[in-house]
Amino acid sequence: MTPALGSAVVSADEAVWHERWEAALAALELDVDAAEELLRISHLPTTAQVARAAVWHPPAGLGPLPAPLLTRAQALLDRQLDVAQRLSQAAALSRRQLAAAQVLRARPDAVPVYLDAQG
Image (cartoon, rainbow, N blue to C red; front, top):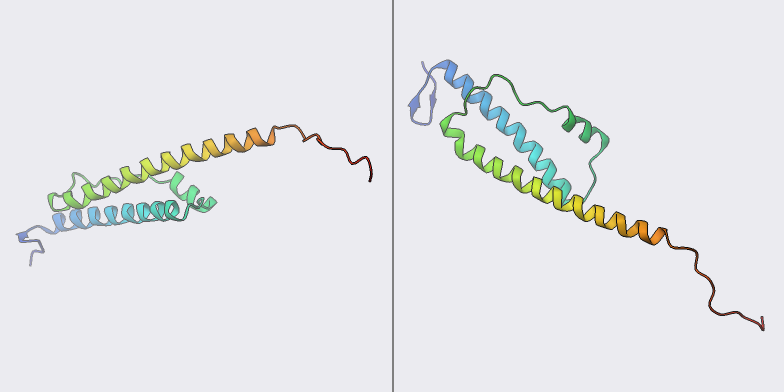
């Protein structure tokens, strides 16, 4: 019997292709969930999280996106773009805060204004 996706009957190869795309989108959704959570709690990622993100490679051999997954993929892209924008804003804010902290550290030691001549 041939598997069905939605109302269309498809071949076994097409079903595998569709499942591979669903798995790829699910993995990307988990990554976006993790990035959104880090932004929500204003927390730096762990070394392991940074290392995992640094070695990420897109899945190979998926072929074109199946049409039934277009809406899901577009929603995921929209979330990724939102996270990217929020990350750039957070990075800019962090740079401004670092610059302000460095200015405060660079100030010379305070010189006393009053002298206690009776003590």
